[in-house]
Amino acid sequence: GSNILSVEQFDIDSIQTIFAIADRMQPYARRQKRTKVLDGAILGNLFFEPSTRTRVSFGTAFNLLGGEVRETTGMESSALAKGESLYDTARVLSSYSDVIAMRHPKSGSVAEFAEGSRVPVINGGDGANEHPTQALLDLYTIKKELAYHGHDVDGMHICMIGDLKFGRTVHSLSRLLAMYKDIRFTLISPRELAMPDSVLEVLDKAGHRVTITDQVSGSSDADIVYQTRIQQERFTTPQEADMYRGKFRLNSEIYTKHYKPNTVIMHPLPRDSRAEANELDNDLNQNPNLAIFRQADNGVLIRMALFALTLGVADQIEKYECDVNW
Ligand code: CP
Image 1: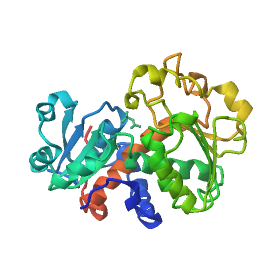
Image 2 (image 1 turned 90 degrees about the vertical axis):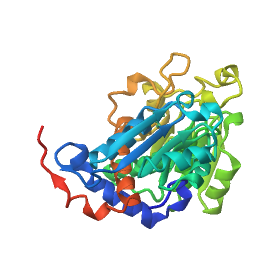
Image 3 (image 1 turned 180 degrees about the vertical axis):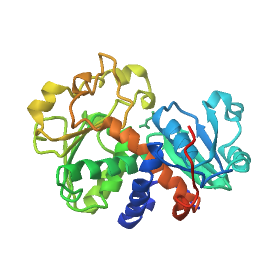
Image 4 (image 1 turned 120 degrees about the vertical axis):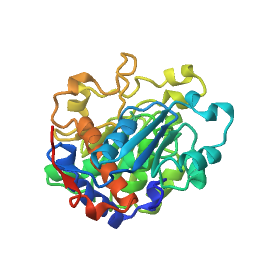
């Protein structure tokens, strides 16, 4: 097995392979079938930064394949707080686990950890850098949502909104989408929170059409609107983040005014529900185009597929099926 550190390591074929396995995971995720293909295997789930979805869906995905999960959450409860290096931590923890999923606030930290690890390491988010498994579940969701409307990823128009500077999910998703054909990107953010040049260069090199703006008007033919949260934890001071919070809201009124009727609404979550932010209003909760919880559900399927591939058991999942006895 190998590490999953960046979306750059994938291509269209490997993405297709992952998605085909994810499709096969549906009956297990729905508890219609059980498998013990990873019986005896241990996932080290190391989250040195807050997480709900990524941490729990990695754990659930591993459990659904029959494996067990060891959790470490929070920097202060690990020996990193005593000054231990990521390398030493990796040397030690990788002998306790068969695969490790890790999130850490520093860009490049998961790759640094992987150098000391003797088992595959999966990046669950490293600072403002990348969140490759989120990008895969986002793309998987985009494909499904667009297919429902009779469209394809190639040629689509995606509108990304909010904190595009610190939002690692939009960095990874953009790099992944760059592998497809003729995509229109409308990147809406305050000027100070624009998409980094390193990502823009990838889109430019692949020949995609990119519009950079601080206005939401002009997106009326977007197929996808991908809203994000102001990443308060990446700013130097909380006051700095306050200046941008609430600038790009999306609610039923704005949606109806600026987007076509079937525009798919996405957000990696968590959405900031405080009144001063409220980037994705609850008045959209009953809108059938709101895909945010389908994204989160798809996270389990994608992470099951990634574990199966990483641990080399993708072709044996059905062989180890067992009875559902509850
Ligand atoms: N989307 C995402 O990464 O959510 P969590 O921070 O809850 O893991």
